[in-house]
Image (cartoon, rainbow, N blue to C red):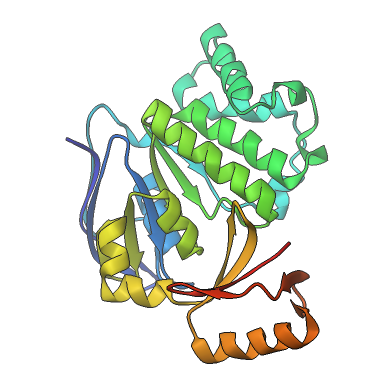
Length: 289
């Protein structure tokens, strides 16, 4: 049985269609990534599921004991969040607000849950630290712990890696993978990094105001829309280091010749340095040392 089902879901803002006739399901233990260009309706879908924006038509069905108020949500970071005047423990504990109802105080169980998630995300030492004093990666872990206090079944994330450096980003995605596999926590996440989505997710939902694809990651890679998006140049972080991947032979050949002549090359504005160890498999890659 699915824990979340969207049937013919449509969302509109001021008579402008954001999403039209979207249908998909999320099961326990699913790791689903939502991809698509800017303005394709990805964030609108998440906000519709959370009840933050009105639904024009269609149905959102919660099952297997999941309630709309029991979904963990990690939104895009903004300046207000980064400078919020509260301690780490206070922010994490606030994830239990929906469970508290009309009670004026948090229970002992809720406080223990907050401490457990601080331990789980290895930030217990920051318990009494002001949130605004933390690094970007630490703040994301705190907000993740807060989201985990709100749910045990479904975690929704809106571009959670935005603004994180590649090493912190890799650790963050590894943490999500562990939560998904060890705790069978279902994940629904927006990502602009198609290669990362393919690496970690078992299902892909591709949107462009309508549903272009929904299914297993392997089928997405083989599909026309998936194959096209996988051929776009992007940045990924692998065990061998930072890579830029490009399937365009003419573009790659030009940079390879430049590498060969100079020994190293760089991309202006990104501070990414590459040596001349370019190689061809299905794609060309420049590997940073």
